[in-house]
Length: 182
Image (cartoon, rainbow, N blue to C red; front, side, top):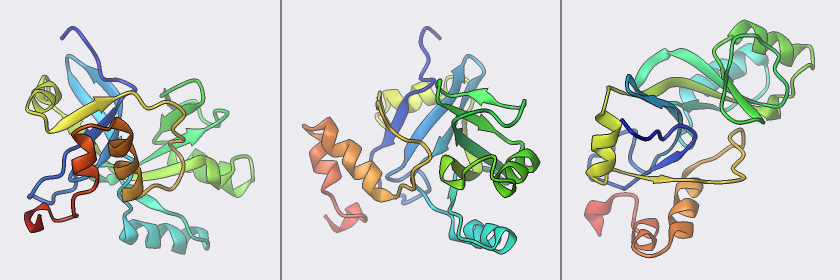
């Protein structure tokens, strides 16, 4: 492997399968010879959101990070580190699974809930799998600067990035959700 997609965004092309990756925007957290790990930024999980709302007693959006290990919870946090268990994403953002420390930091007002994005599960790829999927044009790899990973995002994020790519991507951006209807 002579390159890494770490820190890049994967944009899926819409397909007929309609699986979790259809119209997904994935942040690649790790990519090396062992495989890849990422989180879907734009797929809300209403069931998990409801569970978190019951726990915190205020509305919290939880996102499907991907189809792998949905019982695991991950946090992208913006700002200062409130845990010693983390992986840097950029200078401004980090990833952690330290649920106890994050919850305590929110409840004690040490951490603003607006600076957190919560994920259930993750997206994972075996060695060389992601490279193969990119070669098959299942994903477009892009650098997206100034994207706030903690903002609440939905399908408008996918469409917006596709429109910014221009060219043939404009066709995908304006296609219906079910492309078999096209």
